[in-house]
Length: 334
Ligand code: ATP
Ligand code: MG
Image (cartoon, rainbow, N blue to C red; front, side):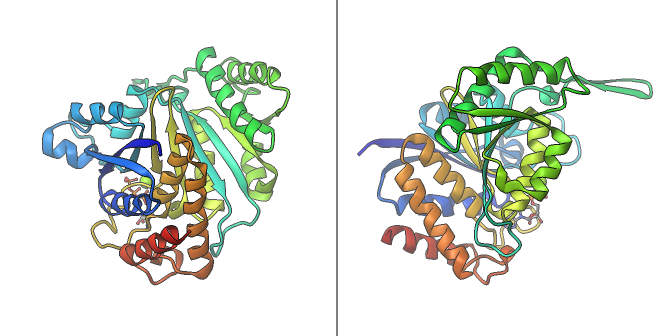
């Protein structure tokens, strides 16, 4: 049995509840998993003066993969504070943000959706270079051939292993220089992968298609900001924040986390829904080369959802403890 070293970072708020829940589910699989724990986020900043201590960097480096809970970003500007996950994405060059959206049996969810949104994670408008001249404010959007080609290849690889379709989202009609470079570079990569049919979709049209007929999409690739916005839309289609997992993938390291934040309004009450973090743990297992174990978690989650054995945010009666116990029982039996 392969030994995997997993770094767990609870972070802030409900991270302290959902990461331990995910750990219990992982432990129920009977794999050879070795856990280390590290700290990051706003509480860590208040404790030790930095959101990401050196020991955390070392722990992520030493691990095969990392599972991250959530980090709070204070709404006021705090001197010396920086967002932990944005910092880690840059530090480890986690260039692909992968967000699968799959219909699950929950009330209000749209049926038949099974897509993967791949968001470029390192550049675009998120280089955070802004300036102000009097009453004019300017933000830079950086697009490089290197990052576009890398994310294009990554998305093509996912599409090749799935239904062989890649929608390339852009706004090259209005921004032919930056968005045009992204589009043409991804299309050049696509020309090397004949098994995948790549086609372009303008981002505003994509927003409409995703609302009206999301079932037609397989893999979608987009620049940073468009990917950020569209992935919240696809999370909304398939059951909401409590269920949406994600992975930040680099050449050497990968950090998996739920799409939701630290939910300070419900933190500490024992009622958080750990499913998004648990499904992120399943993505992590898939990434590590354990697709069977990942599928066992997914199946157990779907069974509980179908039965309505769920937490309150999904209309159920269970708290985090009760839901995790039910999931652990299913996973150990499967
Ligand atoms: P942050 O600044 O960390 O993003 P936030 O206030 O934006 O925090 P989110 O975590 O993004 O909060 O959540 C938005 C809303 O969804 C909150 O009302 C929160 O309680 C709810 N929510 C988010 N995640 C969960 C979850 N796992 N279980 C139950 N409710 C959740
Ligand atoms: Mg939020």
